[in-house]
Figure 1 (cartoon, rainbow, N blue to C red):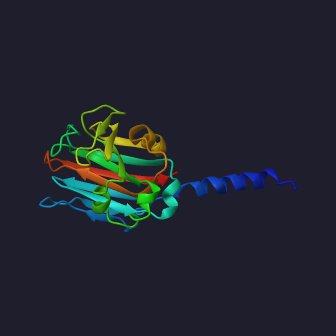
Figure 2: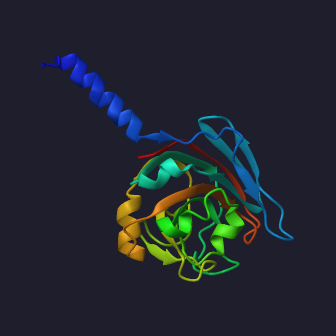
Length: 214
């Protein structure tokens, strides 16, 4: 049976679209604040997330369905019109940054009992690993730093140092998991976004848009 070239092109396009999963900012993201610290202001606007941080810090988290188990990478655009000064991202209590995007993984056995759980529980579970891609800090692009709050379960990957502008990013989650944690079989439980300006008492105006899992 012959298949016409236009039909093949349509089939390939449909296959590529199925392999991509857009993650909208549709009101389903949940904010996690920190004791005695004021929270950021977030505007979930469908394709984009507006972020306002004024001497504040908090994390916005979205749980993902089990179909996210085969995610290999991600892409997004982000912009910063006002940001905080460069900081040492390895210093607990002194690590302000403009934007951080977290990808929360677990091995399949651990993931089965954690899917749908709140971020606070995930971050305290030994079988969870977190890749955090950051715009901010004093380290150069590509720096891989220990996350001072996750005690070996999380790492910070610098994509942009402190500053303003607009950029599009594409990351290879599977490659980073393997290289940093020697983890080759993992399920993505959720994604989080944060801004952090409480240590420097600074101000952040930023946004994240077009977040896609691949």
